[in-house]
Length: 80
Length: 140
Image (cartoon, rainbow over all chains, first blue to last red; front, top):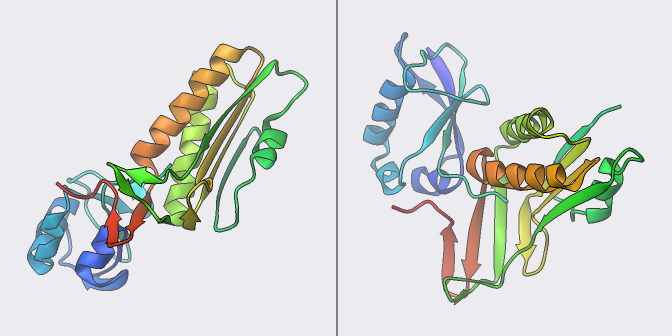
């Protein structure tokens, strides 16, 4: 199933993308996606850690992803 | 009558806009936090800051902060404005304005809002120096 992946901040630089479509097996969770992303984009290990947002809300590791979800990679924020 | 105003813009922020929004005859005080771009970080000279945001989510998170501030503190109105794009030394990336009947709540809500914004709102700044650029807060 397809999801949209958005990259922000330093993640954009490390991965070389800001928005891609990504193919997932069904019933994948945020945690399994994170692990897949670290394999696919090893440079992401350079960040302290990153949060994941699904459809514009912060998501926990156990959230199950759905078709057409918009998943954002959120490196440590530095607004204000 | 709306009592929160959140904004992300690539235009110059205006303190007067935030002040005018929160001002009300029922209020005895307005607390303002104005963030400004500092000329150095860890003794290194900064030439500019580049702010970027996940805008739809950042607006939602800023709205949550405004709503939470209204619930937690006896305040009347709150405005949270954030700029994106390239900012020069002395420019304003963020303004928080809060009005209340009595001053303690305004001070407390204002501090709560900026502290929480810095933790949760998906906005990032990149510092530009003479010899390169660094994303703030991203490195282990």
